[in-house]
Length: 582
Image (tube, rainbow, N blue to C red; front, side, top):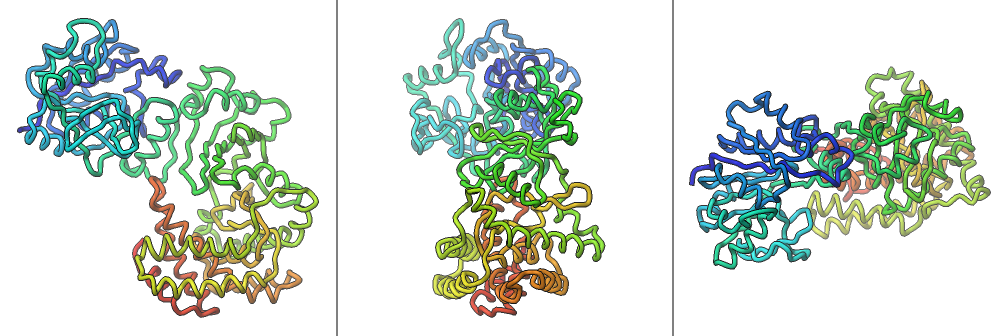
């Protein structure tokens, strides 16, 4: 069949679960990456060859009418029909009977969709159903039982079932199965038709994407999930506070922000920052110092908000570690809110510039100065940290031991050697045996309280002075591990002469400096294996594909360490990773 010329967009919903965002703005006009969702739906239909579009309206129709009056898609002839009373999906079709005279697309205006219509058209041509419904097995409530391409039940929840995405290719023959008056749903009409022997096709479309924008959290997540598809990978986006923060979080922030009422939550923008690899969400909240109490006058113009998950045990330590390190004179962000029961923090915003992003613009002397300063901080942590932590009874993650070394090795083996490179098991076994010797060297080396992720991306700046972040994984371990994290950091990719100069600088100031320097190559191998595993895992997550580009630099740093501590089987792997594209 030829592509349908007509489409009916359902846009009359109340958007109750999205309030207060939808009090004056209908859900289809909420922006996704700066463009109304309705605009994205119309653009998709235009690409599909649709010529005529009908949109039903009810709640807050004004923004939609004003948008359509701009004739955003001249190739589409768009009409709108107002429903004084909500009629449901079935009642809306009955009300639009005059428009329905041939097969047409029916879809919701408030979902995010990226789908190829061809599989639906093929199912329609092959099965001659009453409707062909787009299904997904990747998200949603999974209540649709579909057998051999035919939907048997729309309300049978099971893990192996599918979700109806709200898009269907529909025949006008559905009209007799809709109730003659009042509210009715299309699914109810489908059931009536199925009892009369009509077939409703269900179509899974490989490579498609669907997200329901039913709640503020889903609205925020839809931005994250579509970032790569819409060309915004790794970018920040800005939404009203009402979309990002729960009412409870808004109340917690009210003493240190302008969030004083529901109205302010609609007018105050919050910047949503890209995801990181620590089961935490990060947001930037602008602050009006004049609206804050005196104790918060030291606030910068914005705060970083952190919503953390207990899935990572170390996340619960961030606030307490912040206070501990500040008392130890280790530079960390100022902590302004700690709500552990709500898993919510607010810290000083030090801006987006990290040592990683600043490094290309730094002169050699300035770069060396910053690294020497960081090594002085590391030395303070390594020498004074453990005694102070014992006195403070500071909770820490389990220290480096045989189990943790083995876990990092397994992480590298599973995600790099097996999943990414697909090496034979004999080659994997040879690398695993070599890594055991690395663990033995580190276990016998000088120990201390270490940051664990002491790398350039975790160094921010307060003016010209570096400030450490992401220290919640702090624990007892080989101090050489921190040095390797900093000096062999793939993000910075320091040249070998500077790396060795800085290592000698640290070793000259540590009481066991010679032993630390001797363990450095093993620490670099251990740390870079862990980093490579992390890059392989993170790069597979939506919006985090950028981590793959660090794999070649990590492999080059690994080869440098292997020249000092030869491990032939691992060197073969490192050379392959260094030469392969990210």
